[in-house]
Image (cartoon, rainbow, N blue to C red; front, side, top):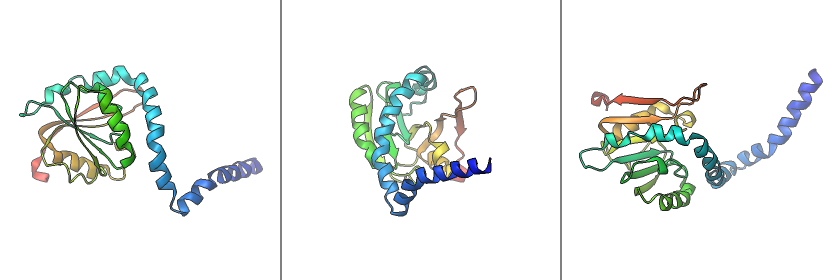
Length: 193
């Protein structure tokens, strides 16, 4: 048994060695940033087919959060390829934030496929530091499959609180064993900002 475990460990090390070598040479992050958008573009097509009814339900009441301007200002944090765009209400003004600049060409394609939206801009930034987004300028922030993969959730949520207008709605996909989605309603506490 010990020999089997040793052989399996050796096999894993051999298989993972190229990744460790690329990371040591400083190339792994560059490769991931270049190729991850292509992978995600394919993955989101399959994912949206599976989750379409849940996403329609999750985003069905976004229009209720329209601010005083009369147009819904939506910030998508960790926008990726724009997989959620087709589920947003018509006329929605979408601002996208993602730390990977290589998603921009996929976003442009997604916006072209979703003419019911008004694309405002794409900001290359980490969610922990969205200083390019004005304080209190967003009606809704959407982040799906994001908070589970970031470095500092508390900092991101502080930034989300900063950019949202006084009453706001934050939605995060929270996969659970029942594959249920939860909506998280937050009340802005301006005394902490």
